[in-house]
Length: 227
Image 1: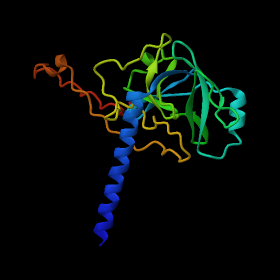
Image 2: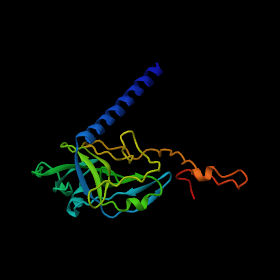
Image 3: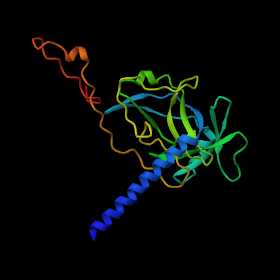
Image 4: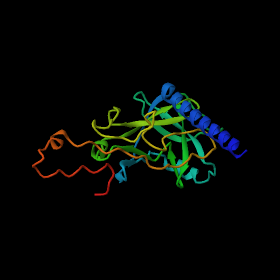
């Protein structure tokens, strides 16, 4: 009968994955585009790819109030201007409900800190300088407070996309961070999972066609290998 338990467990796991994917698809398809200003960040090397540590602007007074909250998640209020840029105002509570023109955004406790959806954005190795131009986190937000980070944007609000010709960590939905999902609930959000392998890039054509009499070219290292 042990196999019955394994089958039931597998079915439940697949059901949860399917439910999570459908939820993200709904946020992407129907969510309002919101740009949240970034506090200056630092691109850092991370094994098989690079990542940018994200830090969104949260009011000091609100940060102080968050110290007294014991739950794993908390909704906050944010105003949105005509360009879609959000300014986080404070906690969303029964005594401080949403006002006209405001949206609810989810904070979650991650590694002892409060973050807006996620604290990192992954991009192809070697493109850190390209992503230094980013000024906003590009979110999709539903009225119930569910939110998803779908990318980064420059000072004009234009998406900053990876340069062509590079591999990138991504899910079938195009989510570029293992933690890029915001849920307006009390349940804690799982922390980052195991890294995803990235296939090595093929040798450039000019190198691949070197005559046999020439010294053998040194193979290009796999992305993320130690240098």
